[in-house]
Length: 158
Image (cartoon, rainbow, N blue to C red; front, side, top):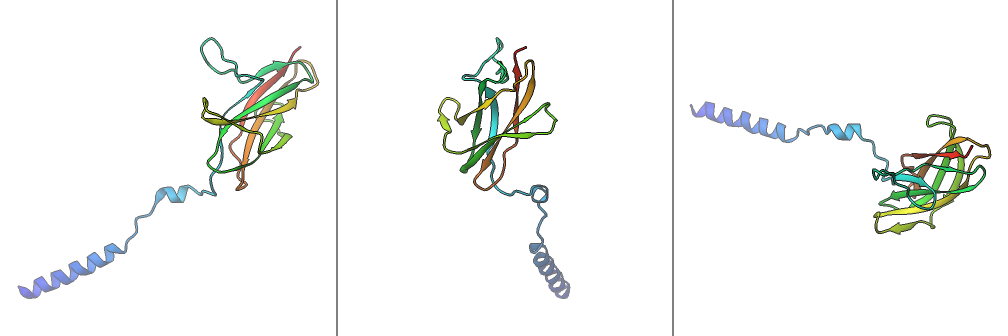
């Protein structure tokens, strides 16, 4: 009987040693390939102030005179420093984007009420009357990574 107990304990010790070396695979690590932290853009709006409808919903787009200056306001947050801000335009939300403006960081201001940074970048509205253009905003951080783009629609008066 002692012979069996010693054998049983030896097998148990061997199994304990083998299972302690086993590493459970991390499924999320295989799915996520992080290159670093990026800035987040909750909202982009046009004009001097935010415009809300009667239901309290932000109306980010604007209608302006053809060829006039309009401010693109980018509201963002970032855990690391920001290098620059880029604005692209396209005829539709899925159209080919053209770079309209690149602005170096430094002019942004912290808004305590929003708890985010806000930067105003002036651009020129399209020259044609009754034109529509979609503007895309992007924040580039110091590590070279770009935020997800947020867009807003700009229309010119007929």
